[in-house]
Structure formats: C-alpha cells, structure tokens
Length: 138
Ligand code: SF4
Image (tube, rainbow, N blue to C red; front, side, top):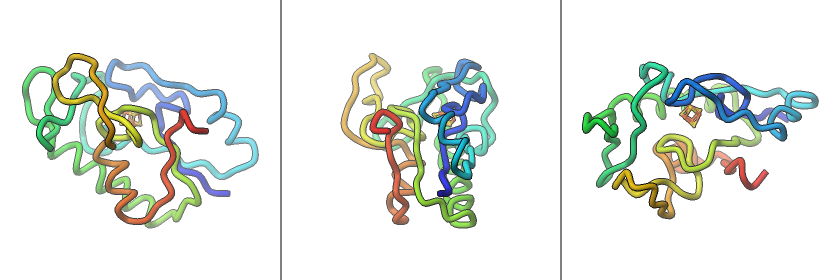
C-alpha cells in the first residue's frame, strides 16, 4: 500500500515550534508500506519554527496578525500535486492543524477553541477525491 503522511507524524521536526508529532502507529506503517511524507507549510515556503496560525474568516492568519494565506495555499497545491503524481491509497494527516486537520480545526480566535472543519490542505485533497484520514482515527 502507498500511504502519504504528515511529515511531523513521522518524526520530522517541521512543526511550527520546531518539534514533531511522532506517532508510533505511523512509524509502524513504514515496515510494510511505501510511505511518502509531506509538510504543506514547509512546502509552501514557511520557515521552521514559525508563528502558529489559524483560519480566520477563510484566510490563514498567523498569531502575529500577518496573512500567511498564500503560503498555506501554495503548500496545499504542492501537496495536491505530489498526491496526484504518487497516487497514494491513503493519506493520514495530523489533527487540528490549519493545513492538515481533517475533522477539526481551531476557530480563528487563538483561544484554543475547536470547531468542525478541515485545514486547507486536507480540504483540497478531499475535494480532489483522495482518501484522507485523521491520525487519531488510525
Ligand atoms: S503542516 Fe502538517 S505536516 Fe507540517 S507540521 Fe503542520 S501538521 Fe505537520
């Protein structure tokens, strides 16, 4: 099986704070599958570490008040292109991220409040018919 995963789940230090979200279930997938890692925010040109961001009225804004929408959407497009080229059977993404979140994301108030909805990359991948799963459902 070919599986695409959020790079931070595979231990890559691409998270906004310079850390990762290493997940042992994801690591086990490497044993019997072809696994491709992607980090949409890095692919979109953002540095690591970077300010955390949320989607505010449909626009991705950093906590410092700067629009990073173009970088986030560029990263989503590049991830989509990678998926179209690689044709993964399954895409497993990190929860609640403004890029990778599948079921939930923060509401744009920077108060830790969650709402139903996806990050911009997960949304784009779903729109194009890819099978996308939240890592918490793995
Ligand atoms: S954009 Fe996705 S892969 Fe990159 S650090 Fe955030 S959750 Fe992980």
